[in-house]
Picture: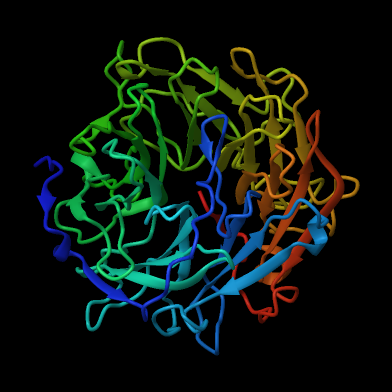
Length: 501
């Protein structure tokens, strides 16, 4: 089957539509900092992290599936329950476009300072948006950060039928020039970004690889693809790692779950390498979600694969764990280490709370952050299909702490809506933990745990925030919010389906 490689195109190959001119901030705020190697989203430049979540299936202005994004602006002085939350959609003043049915504004989210003004910007994917008569071409909306928060926007449009631009996103400096770049799985846009003309240049990107079906336009994947950024080979330039479950031959809906590694270079992202076990030659099981960060602080970012149990995966060499697992691939100077044994955690691992059961979905979503302020990355793992008592699919989240050599099970904790001090009540199909995000929104150097439950209240959805402490995440003082608290309709919208990366 024909293999594709990255190729450079002119920036004008991607259609750009800008909002009305927006004056830049008079004085740029300090650049967003990093904690243990992970970038901090700070949309208003106040030095405290912010977080964004989405309800991509929400009805907005009577349009089903139009979607919206809810941003939490962090604060050192406000309690979690009192922090400012603002909703953005395509009818919000200054945001380009118009709400339309099934655009799915908020399909994916990523945060980065794309124009280098010192404020983090938020990129919002709308994977279902039609561009003129081109169905489901998709689009990206860049909401620009500034002293008062996110304002205005610039749109990058998909160009082909079922391209679904915006189905996945990640950002980083992929060519080492000091400017943030944006990867979508099908394109790479290199910074700096201009509010009117968009990126400096754009190249194509092939996440699907040699197992894609050539005769199927757009994405053909039986799980949502995912991308993450980190310097895996320690050369000072960000790399991109993606997982994608592709179609193959007669198993077009149950093909292998690939791990695709794109090394950064001075010329930009190199063509992808599909990861295989160095000893057996078999494909690594990519799973359904991914996070990248330096777990053992050796200068090389490691890859965390969320390998939730799901359907058959012909062609991969790893044995699926009942209930799901997370697997860690170490970073090295030559890239991902596929030769040495890989660390794996699941609900039958000593020290991990719970019991592995068929269909738990442990590893459906993963996120890295420092929850206890010790300078080491910790790992949040969602298990949205976990039963709570007899309540099937109520869902849960497990937090594993980082140690001297990486992630450990010492002090591990799990949370559900039945955990003391967690608001609400566990119910069948809530899918608590369908999305997780670790982000410090109190400015104390300890990341909070954001957990989405898109099945809550007949799929209206909801978000829970649990506080990071000096020892672990704590349910004490935790809060939740749903569509009603955001001033939106309570129709099925799946709030908490995704968080900014």
